[in-house]
View 1 (cartoon, helix red, strand yellow):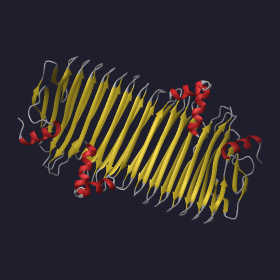
View 2: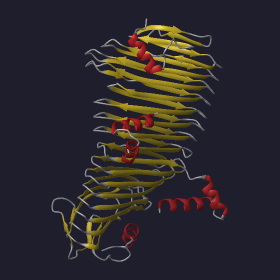
View 3: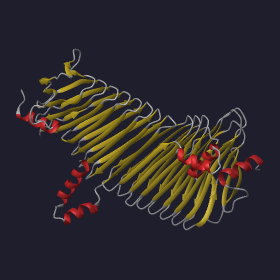
Length: 306
Length: 306
């Protein structure tokens, strides 16, 4: 049973306007709302803790799994453990995400712990969107933990997006890569008001030929605070790159702490970070085209976070 | 009384082959060995702790102060506090540095705490070289602390060099910049054997127009370990850049942890870091010119640290 508010949340976090094709597991207000499995993708509720096991058969290609979570009651607090077992030679898309609508006075919190065991030569695209809304005094809190274990030759692309409405978040992502595995992370973050967002990435390049590219783009507005901490550890002949680009506006504060740890003479590690406001010339250019200053800023931010 | 070993140490750390011109204070084995003051630069021993106060009159230009320290006895351990009071509108060169010759079994340690109070619109070039030698089992330990307080419109350039023979070092540098003050740091570091070197830079850009550029270049060889931590805090309309470029060889390990902390919408902060080994093509190129692989590596390292 999905109501209108939950439907809107689903559209925001998973681009779902109808029931998705393929496998899915929709969780609403801490309960299973709908589930579908396919010949290749099985979903089973965990017996000991809240959460599901998703098992994808070796060789599964061009299939997807959607596992959105929506919270529309105020005062819910839950921790959910979802484990993905992806066989060898797969090529799949996994869409997760959490939407919170909180009109009440109590805090709502969803902490999702996602673990991915990616088999040899498999390819996974993972999309995670977080969204909050509602004008209650209760906070919207999300603390996702993502762990990825990439076997030889596998690859994973993570798109992590949190654009709006989350009051407090600590996002922890840990990845361990075997030989020739690759990881690409694209994080996009925007914070407003008094929001706090902390992103922690820990990437271990353990096998020869492993490669990681972890890039965060963020906009901090009003009095919000963001902390970005990304550590790449090179334990083999590997390549690692991490980057943080942040736009600060108003009275926001951004702290960037990348770390490179080179333990192997054949590890090549690079990081970059830049924090600054929107360049004045960019705004003026758009204003000469007829936009107000606010519209110009919105335009630039949207382009930056695209 | 300076002996032959001490003379060699002085040449290494301060390029001193004869008595320097201008003001100087030479400290050998924890005692004053020689001192000279000038009409504009006074040097006075501290009454309460080990160390000196160096007072440079406003308007002093094209003058220099040398304050080298040499330790040739084994088992010395000292902490020295040197304070530099630089008046307004000065343009001076300050050369510090410590050379340790340790042939004994006991550790030798020199911890110098240097504070610079740089007056309005003054310009300071500061050179600090650390060097160790001697085949005793005793360690050569240097833990320099450098603090710089830059008043409005002043500038300071720091050249911090530690190329050889220091077994253990924690190098802490802190700078606070007022409006339109600027700081340039060039650190060059090389470690061998089981040496450990930790560099900590903390730069606070407190006034509008303040600018800092903190760059470290290092080579880590054999089983040595280096940690580079540079934090730039932007509290005003300022510009900050910090960079760490490291070459790792053999079984060395390098950890780079820059931090950017933007507290002001008009702070523009950037950092970069790259850790890797010498590119194979570079070595091959020099080898085709007749160099052995070792010579080629030395050539590249010398160029990198120049």
